Length: 238
Image 1 (cartoon, rainbow, N blue to C red):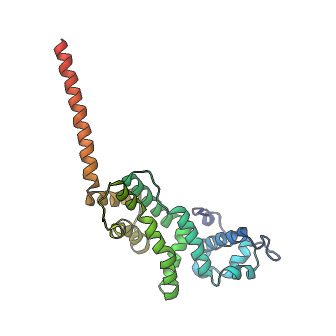
Image 2: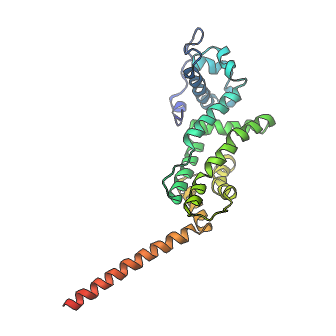
Image 3: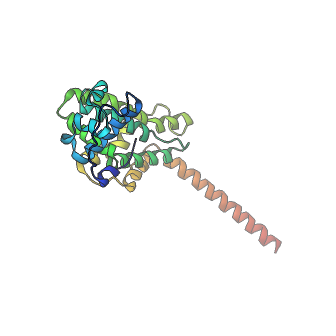
């Protein structure tokens, strides 16, 4: 469902008139509603999104929307949760540093440049005034995303690359927390250089970089020793 921010660039299309539900009571209709909610939020902002507008954009009857959701925030939350599950599951390359760099870059891209990121920022704003919705957002997204965020660390522990007993929850907060802080509070850039620095700081803190550096140094030493030996043999032959 993730589509980047193309809807905003193209501009709103006139809502087509419809009679009943052209999709039927189907998964296709549900997806049409979720995508319509995303698009309308990007175009009109949170206050401009209505159930009626979503139904018209999706080409379904308003009653169809109400069969699945009670409010527009319920629709937007479902749309966001689906996008997050698709886009924010960390890759597994078998290498901690590579996995973390890729995951933080994708998180930053998702939050700052995608339609889903705009939905997330709107939902966070709404949650400040609706405690019940805030609890739903935490349980629906934040708890599940923290579980996904921890996956690269847990895999590294299983491989023996990180020490057993590592507080993965605390460590992942230090990795992703600054990304959310810039997105939601300071509006500073969240570029690749920034996310890579967060990863490097973690690797040094967890002594992973030291292990990698030591291995690299050993490889260099071995290569230099082999070159010296070869040079000595060549001199002897002369």
